[in-house]
Image (cartoon, rainbow, N blue to C red; front, side):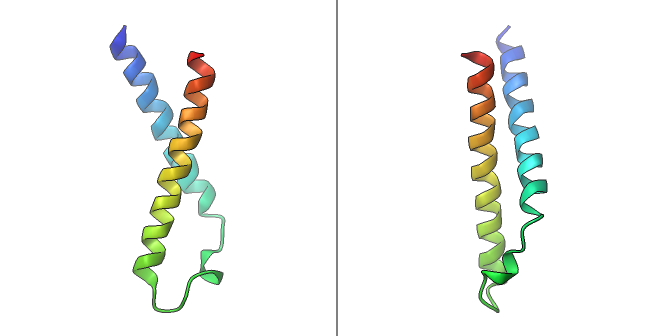
Length: 66
């Protein structure tokens, strides 16, 4: 039974990550980033994707299990 819970949690977080990555791709970050700071912009983008995926995944899991 516990393995099913872990599988559901993993699936929810992976789906949230993919949706966050897809959704943030629609934003134009080049307006807000200084020229020549490409690496910093990529790091910021990944931090935003991971943060949004964690928050949305946790929200969905809280709705499922509570």
